Image 1 (cartoon, rainbow over the protein chains, first blue to last red):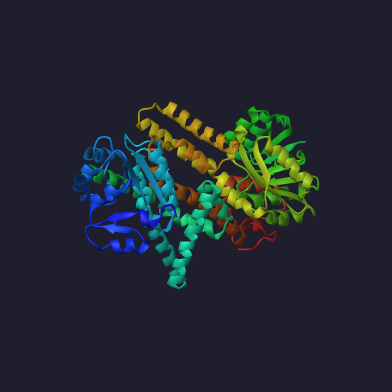
Image 2 (image 1 turned 90 degrees about the vertical axis):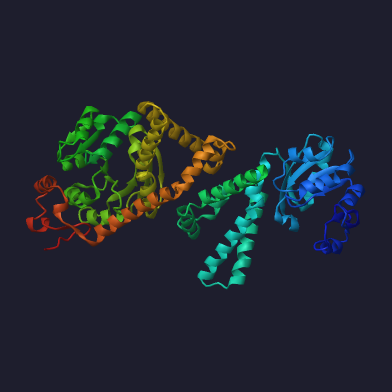
Length: 244
Length: 315
């Protein structure tokens, strides 16, 4: 409820996705320049290879009153500032998928001309979608590895949990729902108690009980190292892609 | 109060050293006995002023607190031998891994109706007064008896009472624990040497690092995971190193080790309960000396001695 839908204008070359916007009550157009003319806060949400062309297109219309926020993966602030007028206020943001359900994790960084006001505006707007923190730009690729791609790791883990339950005799649909709720509940406890995950883990482990037996299996499988490898791989890939 | 040790090996030596260094007991109030006078620890014990004898019976007679500091398979022989000399005043403390209170009480009850038995599990760092000890009191041991032992053992490190059924797990963790630490330290030193440090310095620094970390943990309210995090600056050296440890399954190896030691302890006790230990498993010289001291053990019964029943079985 931060912004009335009628104040949002979205553009795309075709109508393919615009129906969804219209359903929300937003206005739509096929003209990128129109968006720039009629908005003060402009989000760039194209695929990376499309962006340079779009920036060239809108460049003439971008003025000092605009705040340009790029959600485009792998495109650095340096590149954005190079392709836009030199005084443009630019910010770069990396969200993740659960923004859709207002449980997202987002980080953003400022360009040289973006000030406290622009940062505060962005943060206040986006906090409605979840966690939103300002960071140095070097953290953005790490965020990709941790949280952007991270949701996929969680989906994989949830799937595996459910499969384990199915193996032990539980119906799949029920197992999946319980797996998801378990992850949700655990995450909620982490966020709300602020306790170290190791402590919360210890709290669940009664001596000689089921949990410690299961954790031993996870340690045998070097789960921790594998997860660290995953975050590292995704982060490195994000860095490599940004260089292209 | 006088303390006696049946057995004059590593454990007796470590405890005697610790007690005297702590000033809780004068050396001349300690007696240790063993038929084997060639043990290196025997001369060590003599040097610190402990009374050494080859007669286990003499040790029993001159002690209030009697530590059974022999290997588990020897315990039944010892109990047979000194049983007749055990009085109600004695506090018998067994340090033998896997040997249950009830097995000792059963054996002693043929000689003394209400033997005070305490089972204890300690570790070698008692020698430097940083031991880790747990104990469980037997049927006839009073609260004061437990407290007395606790006072003694607290002078050489940490000591607390536990339920007897936890003692095997303690064996796996802190009983064997120093061996895990020595292994780790050896390897850490190797790492240091590989990267250019002289060996002695590497050993010294590695040991100090573990000592310091352990001390921090004991004095902190924080979870070890939190303390670990505090050392890991983002993208720094430590987190890179930790990743290697995780990849190698470091944590699970340690869990496996504690588990294996605990399970083996139980196994040995189970074996002892089920089977009979043949004298071939005991050093011949030891057995001969035991026979000499205890004419009550007949020749026929000496050929196979059942560990925890008082009746001897024939071949």
